[in-house]
Length: 223
Image (cartoon, rainbow, N blue to C red):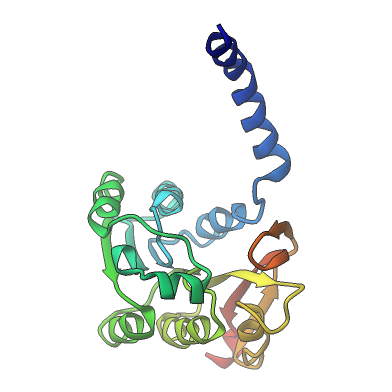
């Protein structure tokens, strides 16, 4: 009897709960990814931190609606190579397997390349043999060391219209995650903008976070 009552309550509660989360608690900053992809009509996307691929699908779909020609997606993650030690150091999320994410993303019809491994090694190696990329999203490891290395690598892939978005610009943490990396970028060479939307969370592991995206483009006068 009690279980039947619970089941009936779930029918009402779950839709209300989902609506409440999407409207009031879900992160709002991610819409900027799709806006930027559409604006520059990106046909190539590089994401550091593919994780389960769900966000990648949305970015690919957005690009396919606006780009001319076939969309290319390149994703980097540790996938099943993520150890517990790295999980703690990088403040990461445990990812699924590379094979599983590949199958998911290939359903979009995009040209998909997934690179497994630590981006301290894989990104510089990729950059040496890659052409330029239209849109780059940095959301991998959260240590300053890793984010700095990721930026140093992907900055070599930029052309005059490329947009780079950093996630995890923690406004209230000046020495952690992306903020110290972004704040140190040479503004004579790059345009740096901290986007206005702020998502605020209380994280049980490292306290209150006030998170924004940071947008970086080449200063066209320096190109």
